[in-house]
Length: 233
Image (cartoon, rainbow, N blue to C red; front, side, top):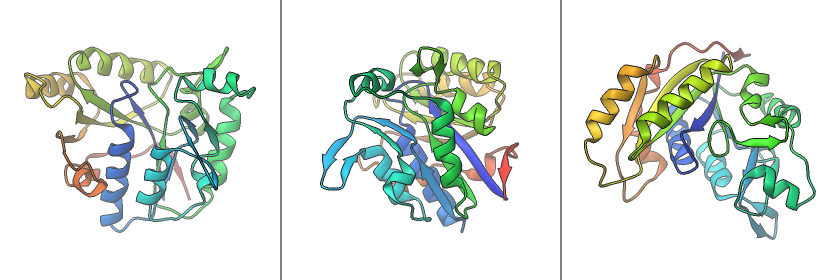
């Protein structure tokens, strides 16, 4: 049985990648074969091997099943901006169907636990008629929400959860990731979100000076994930 989840965030800087890498490391420790995908990335550096995105490289390194970079990040855009704008500036067109096809190709690899990381928040546009939320809908996978713990996070978390439910997808779990080390009443904010979301809290990631996948994994609990509705053998 293959567990597949789409990872989204309350906003661009919520910490999707550090949490995704931590979840992969947690699954690695549990003896699971893991894959991390970043089908769309805007903000890449030119290298001798082509465009490379730092977040995609981190997922590639954290996963135990070693895929090529192109399998992990098939659509790499150079400029660090909203993906649909970056694509227009490169005369490219994004579509959810194409991203889903790339993901399905990588999902053919044998694995037990797969994370597909989004770009930005839930409603990031792909083109005039689609946003990235259509990708997990096409793949029929549940969602893990990374909440960047800072002022305003309660509204961001609840609005994102409402949008996920409105799109007909299940919120499988959420992670509280502290992005503001000086946030006041942190625990009260976590408690409020926890009481409001119909999904388990997978862990609280504190402000970490050394934010390594191992350090993040220490804060997470995969056992809290509710049973997946999408699976692939």
